Length: 358
Ligand code: NAD
Image (cartoon, rainbow, N blue to C red; front, side, top):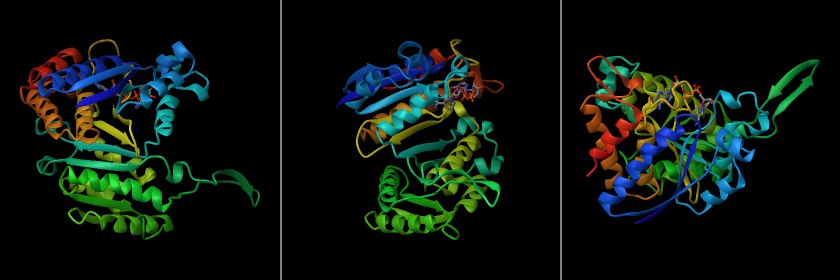
């Protein structure tokens, strides 16, 4: 297969982790006989420094005709005082908007080798954590109108609007059902249908969408219960489908129960390519440039790319299994280090994973 990818390293540890991801891409294409074309672009602070904008138009153009974008991270203290309208994070929001990436996929996986890092009780962790939160990303209360602040009866009031159209719900629900077919065939839709009208519509449309996926089991939870179930027994979940606001909160909760920020990948998808893959962590300016970063979240983002953009399940599995083997051999970067383990840097971790592929 011929793959066209755009790499946007961004800032801080972005450059170091992306170099490891590229090694994995090279190894997989070599072992499985694919062809890959990689282009590079600037985003975030690096783009501000060179082009005066966190998302220059030539970056958008480079990404436009690609199958997937691989992004490191953006931001850092150097740009903290800069004019709000061109902050590095605007690059991220801009690219999501430009390509209408309405579905955000965040797996929370706990590798058995890292179970000590989890914040949950061992008996809960022993049941395993391997779930995927799918959050609607471009609508809902973060974008709804009217919004604002005004004076009513002599005092300030502020308001936002949680709004979804049938189409917006249906398209993200489809992503969830399709993703479930690549996993354990179960979707849990999370809403607040006992209180919110918008959630009632959400639930109706999800139920209707499910009719085309009779092989996928669907259930529903109210968001307060879902938040509780995630810490009580995360092993019950396969795919969690939810709206922008609820997904923002639940995906962070799901991430934190695994205990290791440096291990978690993500994907954002629209109705057409390119899809976007990135680790969930930031640019970690405190450790940038010192070969200390954990590249595994980025490497696992590459695995997600193989699975979801290219439907190359064997290649995705090869990457995931290589990561697991390296962890089983007790190699750890500083962020996941524990007594008795072997400490390695970002570059060596990348090399070790490459060695285990093929
Ligand atoms: P962060 O995720 O960058 O770092 C939080 C802590 O986790 C730090 O101690 C860091 O060293 C550690 N860490 C993060 N990723 C790691 C990795 N791969 N390996 C080892 N340790 C890792 O969050 P922050 O410190 O709140 O933000 C730093 C900058 O990143 C800010 O400018 C912020 O705006 C930006 N940010 C960007 C993104 C993104 O690009 N998607 C996301 C979050 C924050």
